[in-house]
Length: 422
Ligand code: ADP
Ligand code: RBF
Ligand code: MG
Image (cartoon, rainbow, N blue to C red; front, top):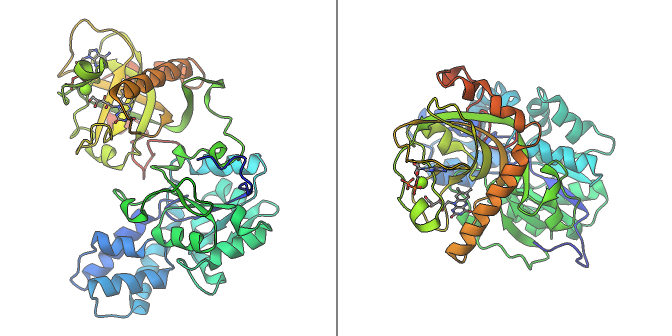
């Protein structure tokens, strides 16, 4: 969104921690569920959403009120704390988080952490992540403001104002990355621009429409940090995309953790070849159900093999709801970049997904969608020629089609590996 060249350019980036950098939300939801069950209640989505982004005691106050729990927030916090404390260190990095933090540090963009988490918990969360800890908290000039270091928690602006103050950058020149409505509200109250990357599946509607022309407030809603473009805010662009030197079709982000999956080719909506002239070999949703549910939506590049045929092909694939067709179902649809004499329904498709191309988008016409998919194919073809993606054509998962999926290292979930870059 064209903030570049503004009178008031972005000078600094403020990062939320939970739900933006770390996937702590799934841990919290699991623990909160077990605590409210002791009182015979079920943790509703409404309660989860109300708690999102707040300080621990405020979380429990919201949940207790919404569910009508007969105990104090203090009591609930005391019950949940030991359960969580044991698990913080294992919270996984979210796709694109480490890549962004490395980039900000390497390109000299001032950045800080503005988190609701108390300092002691922040330290636990960093305890088994030396690189992240170094970049966020131990770099010379590092600024981390925690929830217990300010008077009022999010949705108040205190933590953001303190972080901006620590960097010496005026609030109006700060860009905040947040996952939660309470955080987005706090950032807007601080007079800052906000890009929201919702952490709860299906979340987003509660943020209201994004307004690209606003000098403060919500600018963008993104499906993952992988879709964040610093250059769109006048900040230095990423230089890790393939092919090196750029491509008219954009660039492909190599994934830190490659995703390997197999599934039967099933009938799709019957419109790939017919309406678009682009066949997509839909993979059986139940075969990849868990992974699909947690996968970051977007367009990806990788390698494909049909059954035990000798060839390994380049492929470009779409994972998500295909907004242009407003699908109700999340699908995984590879367009294999090769010609086939006949359909191959019922055969097993093996995929090694190794590059992120772009977020899913909507288009004003079918022609525009088709043109974009061809551009995706072009950039993917070029990127798959480049190391380290090119080597994956010889990945054992592809060369040995009998290899057990469980024996392969990665599963494509937000939690375990992330369809994306961790
Ligand atoms: P559906 O809606 O059933 O997925 P499509 O029109 O998308 O139908 O066509 C997909 C089918 O076409 C695949 O399941 C596969 O059998 C066949 N096919 C032929 N060539 C390709 C290709 N290059 N990439 C993917 N699928 C292909
Ligand atoms: N559908 C969308 O609605 N938005 C997209 O951005 C989009 N990108 C795609 C990219 C690729 C590489 C492929 C193969 C498909 C994409 N589609 C997208 C999906 C397209 O709508 C789908 O192939 C048809 O719905 C056929 O099932
Ligand atoms: Mg299809």
